[in-house]
Amino acid sequence: MGETLFIQCIYEFIGTAVLILLGDGVVASSLLGKSKGYGGGWTVITLAWGFAVMCGVFIAGPHSGAHLNPAVSLGFAVAGAFPWSSVPAYVAAQLLGGFVGAVLVYIFYKDHFDVTDDAATKLGVFCTMPAIMNKPRNFFCEVVGTFLLVFVILIIATPENTPAVGLGASGAFPVTMLIMAIGMSLGGATGYAINPARDLPPRIAHAILPIKGKGPSGWGYSWVPVLAPLAGAVVAALLYLLLQN
Image 1: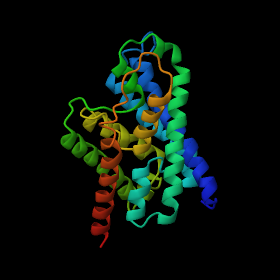
Image 2: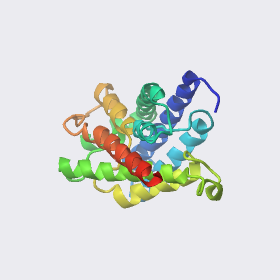
Image 3: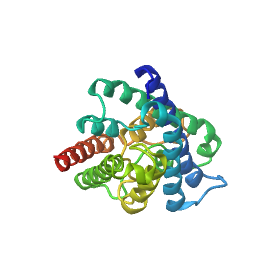
């Protein structure tokens, strides 16, 4: 991976945009009115989110390591696996990619947004809201989910695992399975954001796009899927470092 930081960020941007396009896209397909995928359900959504990550990793992996997630970039930096100097640029690229991916979903499904009456459903296409609003517990859930994401990725990258898996820390197939497992097992409480770029930029898109009949963008909850994943990533990195000593 000999590209400049600028080229790495271009791939982080593209990979994250594809991740959100496919991830938010499956939610739109499953929830919006008159979609042929209407009623696809939680299993379809969690599977497609895993495959969305896989596509983003295949795009960005050879060039940037395919973090596609500010929490991953932060966790890797804390663990000493990524330079701190590159974190701000990576995060900026990821956030911008998340925004562009969400806008593309809106354009793609605009007719279906227009025929969907429920404002909460429209918001749910873009970002997460908890099934039961309990912010301390919601925060804990997002910390745990992101902890597992970052910790397992760091463990996958160890020399003992890499030859067996055939892929490194950002290997597409193990990370795909990991995302699916987190979604199916731990996603029911909060919608498993586990990625600030998956939640904040699409929420901003929801706020500024001219979506017919939309409601509030859930700003009172928005800090949870941003700060909790960052906290979970730091805890994962610190435990990883502890175990390496």
